[in-house]
Image (cartoon, rainbow, N blue to C red; front, side):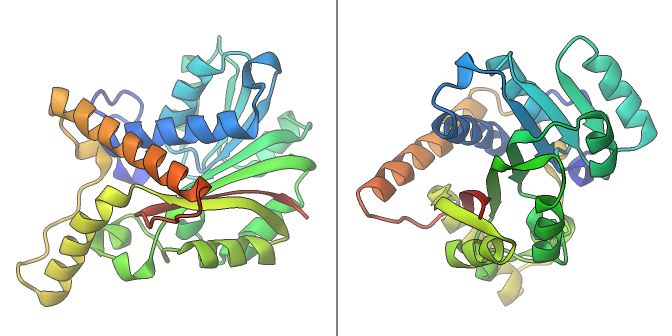
Length: 263
C-alpha cells in the first residue's frame, strides 16, 4: 500500500482492501511466469516504491529463498527502524533511497518491481533511464511494471494518490521503450472495475453530487467473507483476461502491466 494511504499505523494494518489482495495474486502469477523455476534458485528482487512492504512481506512467505531489497523515498527513519526490527530474521532489507540500497547490495537484481510507481513521477522516462544505469540493474534484470490504465479514467482519487497520469498499453510500452527497455509482454487486468470507475468519472464530471473527501486503502474496514469474494472475483478477472490475451483477444482493464528488459 502506498504510504500516502495509511491512516494510522503504517506497519500493522489488519484490514486489507480486496484490490490489494487480488493484485498480490496477480503479481505472484506473473513472477512465476517470469521465473518458471522460482523455488529452485535464490533470486534477488528489488521492489522500488514498496510502500508499507505488505506485498513483499507476503511474497517472501511464498518465495522464502528469495532476497528482497525494498526502497521507498517516503520512509521515515522511524519506519525504517521498525521495519528493520520486524525483518531482522528474514531476507528483507529496507532503504529510503536507491543509493543506500546499492551501497549495501552491490550485486544486480534478478527482478525489479515497479508496482504502480511511475504514474507518481513527473518525468517517468527520465526516472526509468536513471534506474537502468544503476549497478542494481544488470543486463539480465527483468522489470515487472504495473500502472493504472486510461487517462479518461482519471478522477479525484488519482489526485489524492498524487498521480500525474494513467497509461494505456501503447503509452506504457512507448514510455518503457524510450527508457531503453524492451517490452516482452503487456496486458490489462481488473476489467470488472471499469464500470464502477466509469460511474465515478461521470458523477464527478457531471457534478451530480458534491465531491467526497478521498480515503486511501488504509481506511478500508473488512467486510468479512465479502472481502474474499471480491478478491477471488478480481483474481478470476485477471485469469480470464490473461487467457483471452493468449488466444488473441485483448480485454481492457483498470490496470495494466508490462514485462521488459534492457535493450
